[in-house]
Image 1 (cartoon, rainbow, N blue to C red):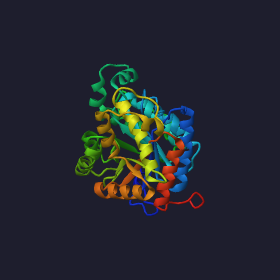
Image 2: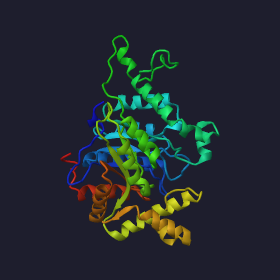
Image 3: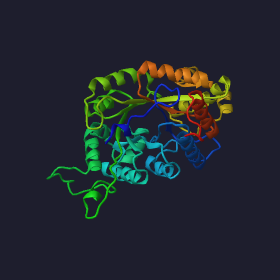
Image 4: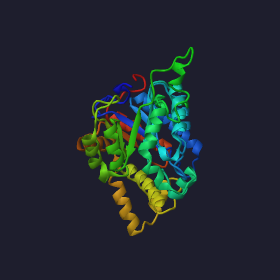
Length: 365
């Protein structure tokens, strides 16, 4: 696997490659179909403007987040794009059998050769009860404790290289490398690069030890970003995948034509987070609903803390915030997520950010 399937190149005046993280958010008065149409439009926009990759996150039992099945969504996006890298940000490995993930992403690789990423996390992407339903077990710690073993098994399936004597030696993930060894077989030289995702030090250390690329969830764990990136770099050991560390961070950012509108939009997204964190998940409210909502002092403190880590404002303000974040963290790539009630607002935000950095126009991409 070549490092250029992992490392991106900065475009325009951006300090590092810019990418997109999509939660397929569903606003009040909108449907999941509406949200998925926005995802197609956004993937096309990202491709046309020179964003490096487009990842979809796995979440469950959240009415305002329609990304429960990343592989299905990525297949749909693959059919509507030609060049941009597509991937999971991430698939929650403990929720799934490693063989199933290898088969799903082998299929995606066959659909979009050379442009599929497999980002993996060890959290459930939901609450404990939903995680138990997903895994058909109440032993929820088992998945996290077994993550390194599950990861090793998944990579073995992707490479089709279980050793002789292993109980899975004759089991093959198809599509996959086994097809090249069958009579008359020809197999793609690509296989999805594996990324580890995290919001603490566990995956940072593991990614470093294995020489894998690392993605950190700065957008909801900002206080841990620099310690985790430092740990990743200190732990890094060169591998067949990478000869030097490569880390991206997820960033919550929203640009609007004026600062007031940006504040209105991020307030609505913050209210959605208040409800999620207090056990009342729902659709993303409208800005009007958020402005009329009477926040308790505790809720207001949460909103202020949450929005302090959301880069928002005019395009120039967002560009300045992203530049500063890249400089402070030394991240090799910024993956931007824009949470808002309306799909049109999200699309406009990415357009404005692309304009602010002088990224390619669709005609010149």
